[in-house]
Image (cartoon, rainbow, N blue to C red; front, side, top):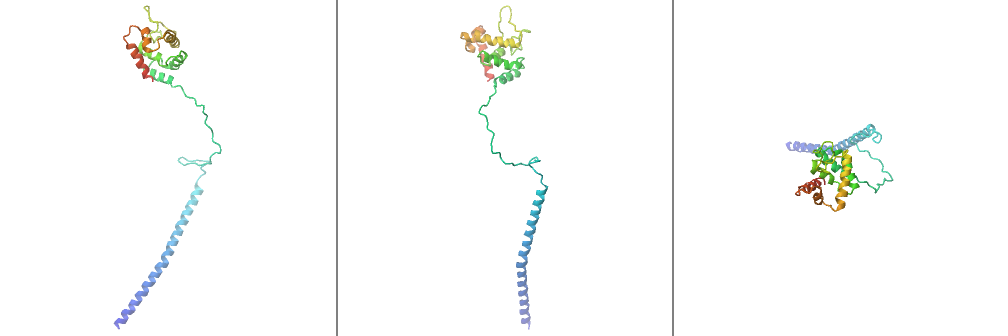
Length: 211
């Protein structure tokens, strides 16, 4: 009799386990399906709400948000005629300003006069550096920064810096370059014949600083 009861109990456990397994395989896919459906439904609702609350970015773009628009069918052309600025006045101006020279406001005129008389645009400034520390050591009210026209009676004076730049530039062309004094060393032999070579050395060095 004990054996019959044991066998009967085993049968009950077998069918119980079978029912549990069946329930598991039926209920689990159903629960997963419901969960996935709910997840996608919530995501769709959030996207729809976001679209409703988002302003028109083309009309009122916000900072940090890229606005995309259709590209034009025609693109503007770039002219081949590109003007280049002349850097020389700025080079002279920066050089003069670095030494606090009163000639700094005349940088444009210095370059214009050099072009007018076909001089190296750095030459008159370099000579002024050598002769007067860029107009810091000159006879009072002479405007002569170049030691121009020095005689036994004194140094030639000019009416203004404008006048001085014009006359010195013209004088270097007429009295030096046109007469064969075409290098700084050549100019030195006439400009300051007693120099041992330091004048030309200084002028050349100052010109190099303005490259």
